[in-house]
Length: 211
Length: 169
Image 1 (tube, rainbow over the protein chains, first blue to last red):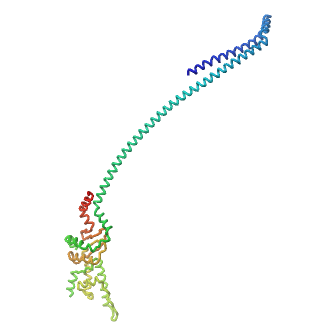
Image 2 (cartoon, one colour):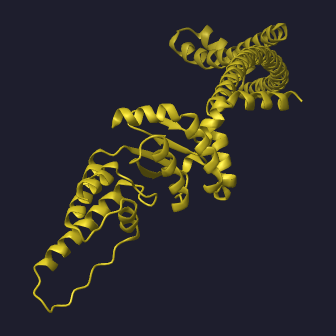
Image 3 (tube, chains in turn cyan, brown):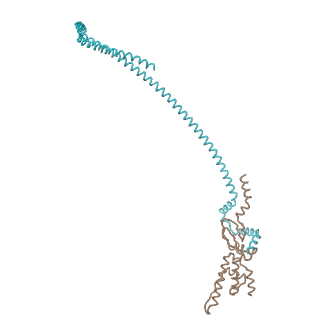
């Protein structure tokens, strides 16, 4: 910023000197041309004599010489100032580049810092969310595990109870499947008769009551 | 003679071969057919050939056991009356077995019932393969389960104790 201010203070006097030189040259040319016309309008021989002297001193050659000198001086000043201007422009451009570079770097660093902070915040949020999710999943898993264990125990108890209740049917079915075809009815006659004999009174009473 | 025959039939002796109510119905149908044949024979003209229908083994046994003469109309009528009463009022016991019993087996079973419960008892045989062994007896108002399944149920505690012992060991 300081370098930029210095550059502007250098450019201002250069441009001012250029403008003053140009104004002096124009004024001189107008003065020389205007004085000739004004001299004609004024009366008097003094004026004519002065005019003649002036014309004698500032003849065409001298004017041409002055013009050439002024032109050369002007060109020189223009060339020098152009060179200074070019140098200043280069310097300004370089400083501007540096300034822009610094500003951009600074901005980029700030943005990167903000971006990094955002990333860090997002990362932290994601970590928190994952931790919460993990905790919820663990809790859910534990609950499900307990429920599953409870249901398994209930199912096991129910199966055992059902097995105990229907054990006679299960074994009967097993016996029937295993040796059902080998069981001869004639071999059971003694057992059947003994069962009938054991329940003889009840059977006879019920048959007698029916009759 | 007629009164003595009536007494015999009234006692209602049945051979072991006659077991089920269906047997009684078949016997009655056979006696009716025989009676109809005899009636037709009495109406026949002389010189026509006739052949007595062959009696079934069951009917022969019944006639033999009750000392009946099927050529005698009164005996046939008494036998028909007896079979009708038997069908209508004889005590019927339903017995289910796991398999179809043989005739000899059923003869012993029906013999026990006629000896101990009622001399004219009949048995309706049923098949129930799920009972595996033993039988199920159903009288007028009661059911007696003599099946293997019932035995298992009665002895369930013994089986449970054995299972527990085996699990512990």
